[in-house]
Length: 284
Ligand SMILES: Cc1cc2nc3c(=O)[nH]c(=O)nc-3n(C[C@H](O)[C@H](O)[C@H](O)COP(=O)(O)OP(=O)(O)OC[C@H]3O[C@@H](n4cnc5c(N)ncnc54)[C@H](O)[C@@H]3O)c2cc1C
Image 1: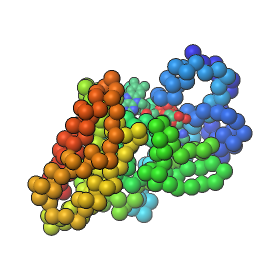
Image 2: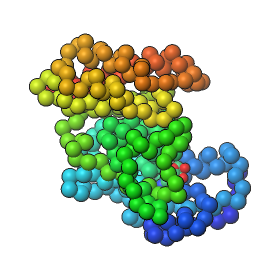
Image 3: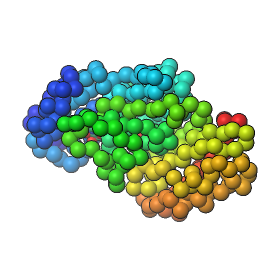
């Protein structure tokens, strides 16, 4: 168990930021990750900052064509949102692979990003979408999700609250693709590997491609070098096949009880190939 010294159930962002500045505390959004982790670590005298009750951190809106998702928006709210279904159907489908309805009703997209887990299902799609993260602390800064992941469970967050995720119109308009979660069960299972591919196609040319993996590196990993080798090329069977070898140069899966390194290398090749094929078929 853990003992709680203090808990602020913040109602506004300024109130939360003030508490964060003055206290050594743990941020709790939906609590589906952090409360389990704190219990397992047998933490004593914890100060908790609950941000789930702050209205301005919730909801999804369209601003000048860009889609803004409040960090404490739950998976269920995103899955059911009309804007997301129409413009980012692959995000909606991806989030349906997370846990079971009970967890999707409390788990938030911000918590999924900030926990820094390589298995976070939302991460590969958000990497492909070049999502921008707005972080508020003593100052406000916006960073690309690509720069947010620093190492194993390590993210670029320093006494800050992730307030919203911005998906720019130029990064979703005319892109097609999806996310595949490879796990042993369809529900309540953590990914053995996850891959997301988004493409833009014009006249049988791959004008853009974004590829990202979960559980194939210490953190969610975008394959920029592979993308470079594919962009601007005419779509042929050989080109699509080439992803199988290319991604292996960028990924570093490890041996784990969920599967051997060799098995995950095989998965990375095969799933990358299948998702690229599927994305191209959707685009043409
Ligand atoms: C039964 C079960 C099944 C699960 N299955 C899956 C699954 O299939 N796929 C998957 O990806 N995840 C899964 N999870 C993990 C979890 O539900 C998700 O990662 C969820 O998105 C976490 O969101 P949360 O709001 O509950 O985060 P919390 O637990 O509240 O927080 C997670 C971490 O992020 C920090 N944090 C949260 N919000 C912010 C913010 N706005 N700003 C700064 N820091 C913040 C917290 O301090 C903490 O370190 C599962 C969990 C459970 C309990």
